[in-house]
Length: 222
Image (cartoon, rainbow, N blue to C red; front, side, top):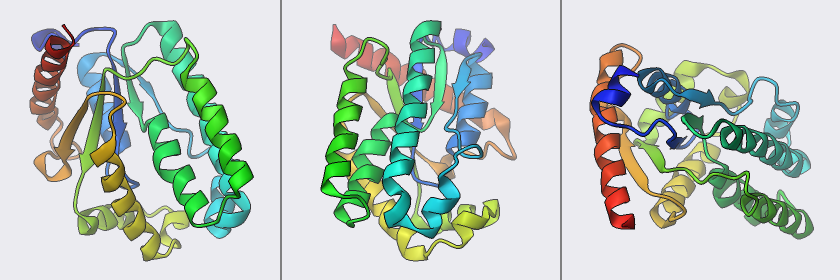
């Protein structure tokens, strides 16, 4: 909260952290929320009933997984709306449709009927008044080697058993997605520019950049 006041971050801001698997979204979400005195909104990984099945059989479980993520993320969006903002989100709903669902459709892991059903649900959700678009999306980016190293260190079995080609493709798809994303303002941060695990004070320069960026985007809206 001290940093929020120091850099005049609005107390009702909604900031989303985006980036590929292993890039450090959860760590950034925790640290930034603590620094600003904001609530957190996390993707439910450990309680996801489809995730282990999905990594074993993409074709069988991709639609189920994406529908589950969509429903859970919409619940989080509604909670943010009801609280009136002041949240840091771990991963955005835009990644679900712009990267994952699209990828599984293109790779024929999801049928055309399932994909169209998914997109219809997504479009209906984002048009509701319960869907606050983020004031800022922070995109965490890094080299493929750095991200693979982080995945290895994290040691989740389902990720360790995933073919490396999947992570290579995911990295490229994320880069292609962010380069054309325009649903809200985007601040790109290289993961080599900070170390929140060993030095939590490295969050302050990030807060300063967020403050400057939010002020600039507000000026552009006027």
